[in-house]
Length: 238
Ligand code: ATP
Image (tube, rainbow, N blue to C red):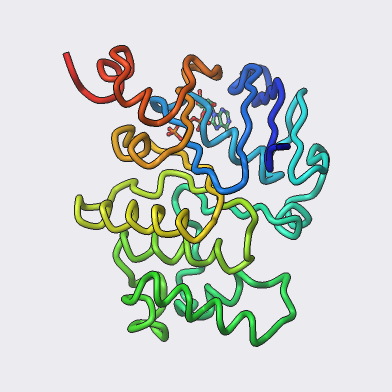
């Protein structure tokens, strides 16, 4: 089986600083793959490169059988790769519903868009209840839900989530993680970046630990969850 996403020896630099130093990994259809690692390991840089916001200095990205290198960000969305970024980047003055509609900006199928908005409201009922509310007035957890919902509105083949649990209360975090599990059960393929290694590894089919721009360790989520070095470095054990 060919992978939905294939990243080969990817390097990305900010000027002279190389943030991603030759990483390779794949995401198969239907999988949840996670990148974990401390601050500054290069996880966000990797996602931003995959969605065309940063240009790699070298390496190869293949998505759904097509090369992504050099393809503009909006075309990458059209190919089926959606990104729910760190910090969310919603339009604060627009309502929940308007933000969701913007997530479908490349689509013309009005009925399908309406159906998918309803699907987001089923996943996150609170968004449905507040559909006319400006997104800037939502709590952090609600904004995170909206960012995920907006990314889903492009009907992606691959959904990339950057730190969906950041800054959330334990209850909200649990809700977000449950939703990721639900999305996977519905067949959505997900590339998840998380600081919360425990939650990410519990969910993931496959996981990679990034350390200063490199992949230091890879394995199934369960394998890494029980790996002694991972437990010490990322799960707060002595
Ligand atoms: P975090 O969880 O803090 O976002 P991360 O693993 O996602 O961590 P990146 O944000 O990808 O890490 O950062 C990787 C490295 O690149 C870091 O050393 C960071 O300081 C550097 N970096 C990130 N963005 C820029 C930028 N715009 N200009 C220069 N250096 C940057």
